[in-house]
Length: 202
Image (cartoon, rainbow, N blue to C red; front, top):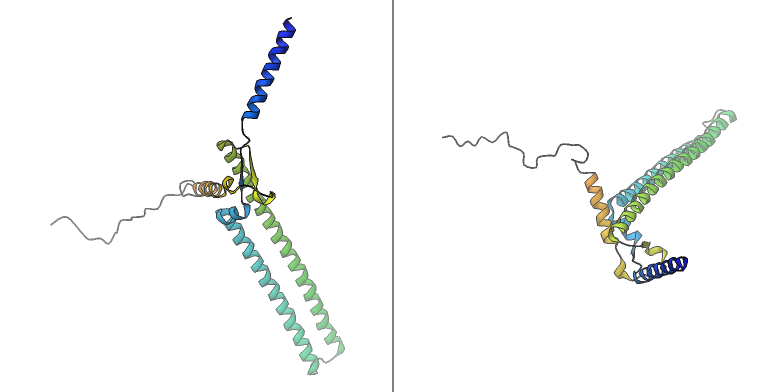
């Protein structure tokens, strides 16, 4: 009899728990990641870094190409004008040209690899910062899930929290980079003018 009572109580408890689960709605929100990346200051800095690195790479590549082209034109001109005193002298410059091409290729490959590594590290760091913030944001607001718009077929726009998330991320960034947060003295926005000769004394 006692076992039957305990079993009945357990079944009732499970039934109540099941009803509570059914009654509690599954709360979901979403972010537009492409939009978030245009609003979050750290994402903006990443985009600026990406642009700078690509610009620097293209400039370095052009410089190498121009140097090789200039030397090639010199060889052609010297050969045309009969300035090479021997075949050996011509071949020496041709060998130097090949070495320049090989060296430039290695340097550009190394530069590209370094650029990709830096961008990958910064991109991963940025993604981790956003993910950590979203996890905390979801808990604080009682959300069961925050989805990415890009990974779904359709989500009602009323569940979009992109602007709120971007505002929170920027607020956290500004707080972390404020002068007092870094231990720097605050700058007086109204300094005393040492040249002010005004006096109240008569």
